[in-house]
Length: 71
Image 1 (tube, rainbow, N blue to C red):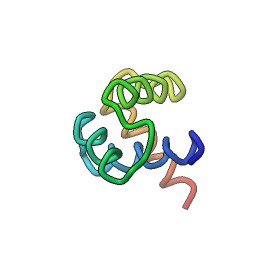
Image 2: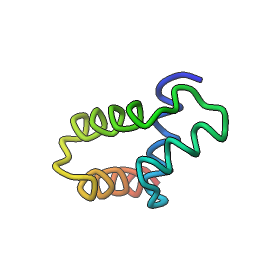
Image 3: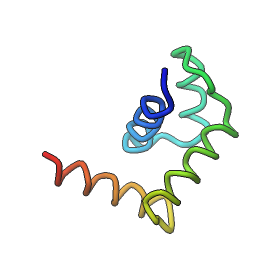
Image 4: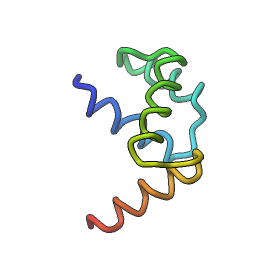
């Protein structure tokens, strides 16, 4: 699985309201690698920087808005 696909899965989990720990557990249960909590934390930090988000809530709002505008 490429990094973009894994990023999409993590974003989908975030938009479902899952915590970072829950996301790491879900990735592990479904056999995705990497799936550690530190990986999930790092990926979320990168997503916040990529979207210039100041908080998790802000990141969710930005991603949701971008998805809404695409449809």
